[in-house]
Image (cartoon, rainbow, N blue to C red):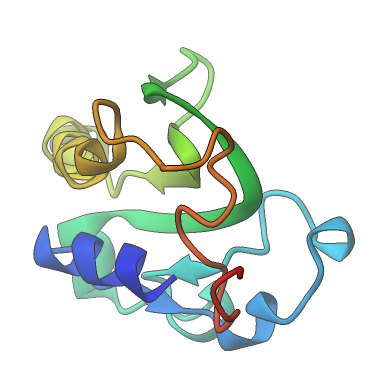
Length: 139
């Protein structure tokens, strides 16, 4: 998880690990609300205005397993958010406004790109590509 935070921070996104959500099992989470890391402050609430203006609102989840595939960037015409999925990492970005959306989405895409193939896990599954929260590496 810290690797995800560090890489997104290196691209100007002020992500932090959501300690509360990280302890909640995946099957008990509230979809669209619970995330492992966010730039929205504790529990994803009370995001400072200057961060929202500069970065938008970012929620990232690291699943227990994933598959090797190219970075998938998806935005439906009826939604304001754009999703970014690669391996076992799933991030959603809500732009501050349409005026800065293209710039904010491009930043997210650039930050997520390093995990896309040709990077390959030594295992067939991407389980463990990134670890959730404070889990110890699999043996």
